[in-house]
Each structure stands twice: as structure tokens, then as C-alpha cells.
Length: 395
Ligand code: ADP
Image (cartoon, rainbow, N blue to C red; front, side):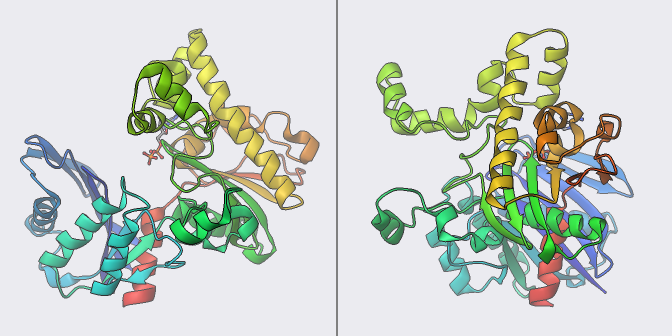
């Protein structure tokens, strides 16, 4: 028996889950938010109850110290020696990493080099890795990449139709993200379907604040909607998804913004927030649309229609599809979005049941039994995938 901690460090946050392995029982989980501020919030669940503390957490190292000492103070562990492995989510693994890897000094150097490709994400992940390394230097740590699962994409999927030397010289290509989630739900779908994943063509829709769609053939990702960065693909909470690239200089000229400022608008003020004009949170949008707010209704339509089109294109890409999977906050909970995404897909063998579609937050089939294409809701679990990889690689 061992205890493995899965870490997801963002620029101002750190999420954690402590697992007992191999049983995969979650011993505790929690979150540090607003790192860098005087009123940082530390939340941990103890026996199913949330304990929250507001305190001064200037940087990630302090967050890790507080987290570890809380585990002892709350009697969750008796000593640090009980933690046998650490798994870190790392957003970008470039072409270098097609699987999780034990973090050595050499790997850490490579991750730092990759920060060029993911300046918004990798630096925060690296800060998390270093903070744990300082406090628990002898506990093996594993990096689990969002991009790794998509490294099976063939060149025709990942290559942009740009001068080929941009790919060779600068690594300009589609990498794809949410790989750990797409992998988890595709494996779980195969189990629930009672068929080997090698025989299946799956379309996985990870719909959270960030959203991406993946075409998974024989257990391997062969295409996905996100691109060089997580900005591409479908519309998201605040991200635009695909737009005409010529819009960037046009908007710069019209608004006087710099390229970085326009990029910031595309990342933080677009998508559901941009179209609705008031919120990136789908729950707000759904309730306002119900009350007749037209811009909220439009945001729902824009969001769902992009996903609907990806499903059609990925079904064509795989010469058919055996199952469509919905996961993450919106995919798991929003019958409104699922209904709009699936609307009219009977022509390709998708017969879904509006009554079953009401399901929230648990594994379920929402297709009619006779439907050739199955439709499934599968809550994602990236953390358990991280813990499994720690056991596989380091223990
Ligand atoms: P993140 O990408 O930040 O991990 P999540 O997977 O938590 O995001 O998804 C967040 C999104 O899920 C938000 O838009 C939120 O409104 C939506 N969501 C969560 N619960 C529900 C619900 N019951 N109905 C509709 N949308 C929901």
C-alpha cells in the first residue's frame, strides 16, 4: 500500500488529491487559491467535510509547506515518509514526451525549455514541481502531460498548412490538450461498452471552462480540436476557439491594441463570455436564456454548434463512430448543451433519449438501446490517471 499525491499547479492555484494506491481510494483532496495574495484560500476535505482557511500565501513553496503540515496536523498522515510518490500535471510536453516521465534534473531542464511553447501554463507547473522537490527531495515525482495522449496523431492531423520549415524550425504544429481526460474517458467507455478499446472509434467531448473534442481510433488520439495552444478549436468559457487569423491585425488596427492585448481578449474575454456579454459560467447562461435573454441564447447556440460540427467531421475522419462521450463540468452536467450538440444526428445513427439525457454527474448511457452509435456521460478523473502513472513509473 502506498500514498500518492496528484498535483495540478496553476499560476495562482494548486489543486491536490491524496490517493491510497493501488486501491485508488481518495484519502483527501483540496485546493489552494489566490497564491501570491494576502487572502489566499486553503481548502481541504476531511472526512467529507470542507475545512477552509484564509491566510497569507506569498508563493507556491509556502502553499506546499502549508499543505503538507495540514496533512499531519489533521491526522491524515503521521509523517511525510508515508507519501511514496508525487504526480504533477504538466500542460505541455511538446514532441519530446509521448508518455508520463520520472522527473530528473534533465527532465526539469527540458520542461523549462518547453515553457516557450506554453508560457501561460508550464512555468506554474514547474514552480509546483520545484516546491515539492525542495520539501520532499527523496520522493519520486512523475510528470503527466496534457499533450502526451495526442502524440499519436498522424502528420496530416497535426500539421498546419503553413511553410513546412515553421514546423521543423520552431515546432509549429497542433499538440492538443486535455489528453489525460480524453484517455481516461476513452478507456472507461471501452469498459462500459464491454469491448476492447482497440476496436472502437470514439469521439470524446471534454466540455469545461476549457473545451476540446478528440477523435480516438483504436485507443489512440488521431485528431483533436485544440492546437498549438489551448486557444484553438471550439468556443469555450472565455476563449474564442478557431477564428480567421486575419482578424488579429484587423482588430489591432480598429482598437489600437497590441498583438498581445488582442491575444488576451481571445483568451479571456471571448467565447461564452464574449458572446453573452455577461458571464463565462454556463449555469448563468442557461438560466438567463430560459428567462428570454437573447444574447445568452446565442451563446448557447454558438457553443453547441461548434461541438456539433466537430462530431460530424470526426465521424467522417474515422469512417464512422461507435460512441460519443461527454465529460467535464458542462459535458457531465448540462442536458441543455448535450441536447443541442446531439440534435439531428439521427442521420448518422445517433438516437438519444431525452429522458436519459437528464442525467447529471454520473456514468450513464443516454442513447436508446437500438441506437447504433452509443452516447455516454462519463465523469472525468485526471487525478486518478496521474496517480496510476506515478505507480507505473516510479513505484
Ligand atoms: P475547468 O475547465 O475549469 O476544470 P469544469 O470542468 O469545472 O471547468 O467546468 C466548468 C463549467 O461547467 C462551467 O461553465 C459551469 O457552469 C459548468 N457546469 C458545472 N455544473 C453545471 C450544471 N449543473 N449545469 C450546467 N453547467 C454546469
